[in-house]
Amino acid sequence: MNPAPPTAAVEAALDRAVELARCGPRHDRNPRVGCVLLDPEGVTVGEGFHAGHGTPHAEAVALAAAGDSARGTTAVVTLEPCSHHGRTPPCADALVAAGITRVVYAGADPTHAGGGARVLREAGVVVREHRHTGAEQVVADWARAATLGRPHVTWKVASTLDGRVAAADGTSRWITSPESRAEAHRVRTRVGAVVVGTGTALADDPSLTARDRAGRLLPDQPLRVVVGHRDLPAGSRLGKTRAGEMVPEEEAADGWSSGEGPRDDQVSSKEGPVLHLRTHDPAQVLAELRGRGVHSVLLEGGPTLAGAFWRAGLVDELLVHLAPALLGAGPGAVPDLGIGTLADAARLDLVDVDRLGPDLQLRLRSVPGPATTRNGSAPTHSAASASTGTAAVHAASSEHAHTPSDQEVP
Image (tube, rainbow, N blue to C red):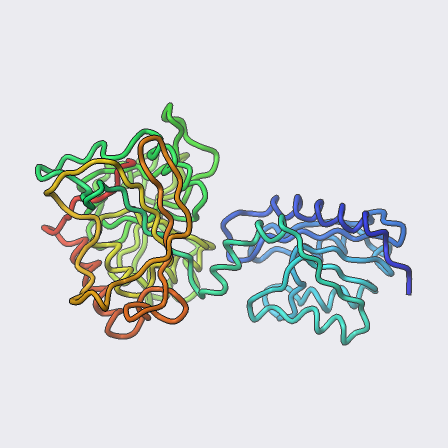
């Protein structure tokens, strides 16, 4: 067996593999992965990254680039090589067949596709896990969604100290500061999708884009999602493309194109795509988004929509922008959660606090208790909670039921 490359070369190769991984699509069903092949002297003989679902994996690209030079090399990969048969052959098998003698990977695969390390060891390959912060960051959203079995959901709230999202007369702009609103736009760039109900879409006509303070579009735009059966006006910000055309989505998720899921329409523009999911079921919404490669969701609609997700056990985190103001009356940020006594309160864990101008930003997660499950999420998505959640989404998108939203950022 050839000697291992120098440690410094492996470290540099991991850094390079992370750079390569970042070349892959941010929002895809598969993780972003990079791979570098090193000879015993630490010289790179091949490299590659995964360009998205259905394309060759990073290891296969690197092996193809190296050709016969791959034999006897060390594969440095940002994620444990896969061992399952899908659209592409298992990477672990490909590495063995190419004569790779060593594999260094930065993190284990948490899905059923994992197990590549075991396959490699059984074939006589020397395998080592070498943790790397950059590699962990590049797959963080994907890994979290893979563990949950659905996209991670953040419920965003912007309210006064007494929990109001609008005054008694319905006015709500602006409760929070310019600093908070700028941060809200930055948050949009970090998620795969922003979700509102048709009630908010019709009442507020939001764009849901991520913009800077001058109103310019930021480089990373989320998928903009509207939930509910009502049509959006052709002239609304979310109901048209730049050309004013409604384009059916051509790449529906598995099982949905056959009529098993909600009807959906997708609008495309320079501001990013708009997806209208004609369903009232929060679980179906997340299943559809996961099938489209969305790993994280930001709920920006009114409290009714967010409450539906909460009741269905599908809210993982709350992001609260709290303004130092009191209104005393007006719609609240949180709907009726069905909690009748203090002992059943939904307890939250305060993760961190930031100052945004005069406002506070609170990031909170659920903690185990009577109103939560053992893993710290909201109540489990049982048949009862699913029914309640579906009914609540239906209410949020019905003709006459629009609760003023906390959606301060248009």
